[in-house]
Image (tube, rainbow, N blue to C red):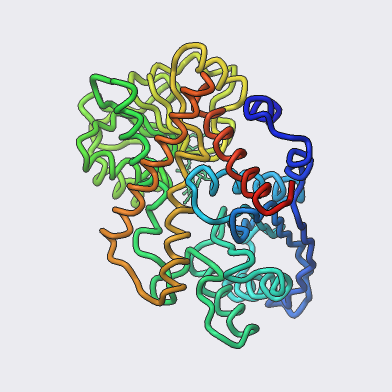
Length: 398
Ligand code: NAD
């Protein structure tokens, strides 16, 4: 942030306001468990900045959710919505819980309880939650229903990532990977690479959808990994069959005549490396293993700051998470627009709009990189912080 502040010459008055959320809620959610005992769960909602539009960000269910994590993620959402230039601010929520330990009934009561606790602070024009780690479309359906019951009216735009039957958007399920693909195509127009061999770390929602999209578009996916290991094939993996194999066996390893990877997915001979697993996957300890010319961050924060600097010095371009994985929040925004109109788009319309928006965001970030002679990450932050700061000035908040 300090580096970006200097580059864009951000004034003190704005900078001070961007250090903490505009509002932070901590709530206690008492839930009657199946045993009859009441258990009290802690929940948070951080509303970081709404200069560009209503707060926007997911709700995480995880035993390690903390106040500082929710605050940091809400700041990060502020930059993400700004970098793709959608009229939304940044927020984030979380509940300290291991959802795997709850019955379906307990999970539903907790989800409704969280909405009851924050009801007066959210709404289609105030703050719009969405799914995040261990929350999904079913939970969003319950939450939207609870909000509408309390409001006494339909208000589907209060939450995104809903099931299609209650106002969800087509293509939302694979939007993050699809957005990442559009950005990758634009990056390849700038960074000329002869071959299109790709390695993907992580084969969950984002990684497997990305693999499928790449294979459909003529890329050769030579290696993928998940938490149990990785597989490699120099002629390219049959992605559709690999997805079925993972569904059946629970992992990507021991797949047909592909080789199990001995070492690290990072050191495979790929031209493009897609990081779609966890944060801090690439550190100063393992960064030198990377052979690719282009790295795409589909996960949140997979490359540490030190590793990022080393990659920059080596001339390996990294498309940062706030740009590369913004496809999900963009289609969330499209979902809200469709909810507001009560008119729903075909899948191809959603994709066309997503492509246009992601291509524009990439071009804007690239222009910043050229202007400030920096990497794409700093370029993306310079662009987004400047956009938020300008909206604050225009509102007289400077
Ligand atoms: P997921 O849980 O479906 O998949 C994660 C994958 O990573 C799994 O295949 C898991 O086996 C693998 N993995 C875990 N540890 C690994 C390791 N050490 N090496 C290799 N693979 C490992 O999660 P997801 O929804 O696909 O999200 C992946 C990342 O993308 C996360 O950082 C998430 O925050 C980010 N993200 C997701 C979305 C979305 O729409 N789902 C949007 C933005 C960002």
